[in-house]
Image 1 (cartoon, helix red, strand yellow):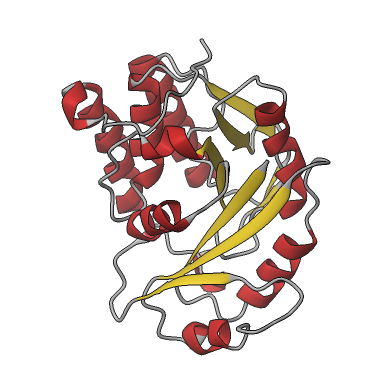
Image 2 (image 1 turned 90 degrees about the vertical axis):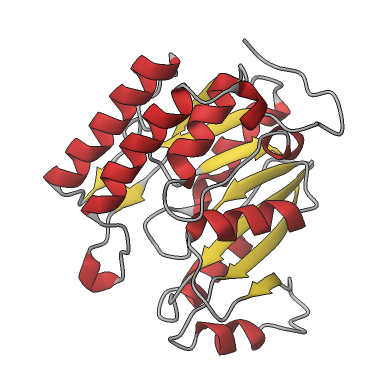
Length: 249
């Protein structure tokens, strides 16, 4: 199994070298190979030049697939990464140090075992370190909303560690440009009948001073996204799939 690690990056000059090193060193289950897909979403802090410095690295060259003059948002960057990925599974990795790539093996294993087509890394099944009370509350509201609206049975809807069989996520019409990617993809995989399998992951929160970009307004947008897609016609959710994909109840 080939796993494509998609890293959307925007102004992560300080942390990206550490992230890339940890992604490269992270182990996968036996028989798995790794592809790194980096999408630079209009960085202005030197990240673009930094990424260029990795070209020709014989160790494991990251695949920088997109440089944009403008910052379009995480959703756009992830969608570009999905389109460029060549792996059997795609896994989203933020370009900061909140999540630990050492959790990759646990996230990928359910795919190998045939237990899941969609896997989320739950911070609340693990040990979330340093999460502010307001962020905790927002996460609880989004998770409860997803469970009520979609019968999702989740503990962490807003986790950034989301992984999918590539054929599954390409069979969904994704539209988000910003942070609403997370609730949109949750809503749509559930509307298409896929169960979301969760595994525990570690988490070390960072604040705005450390470069965290999500804001309170993004929380309201996420909640509205969950509500909106609950009533969206299926023809606007599903696209023509290139291959049959088994679904796990």
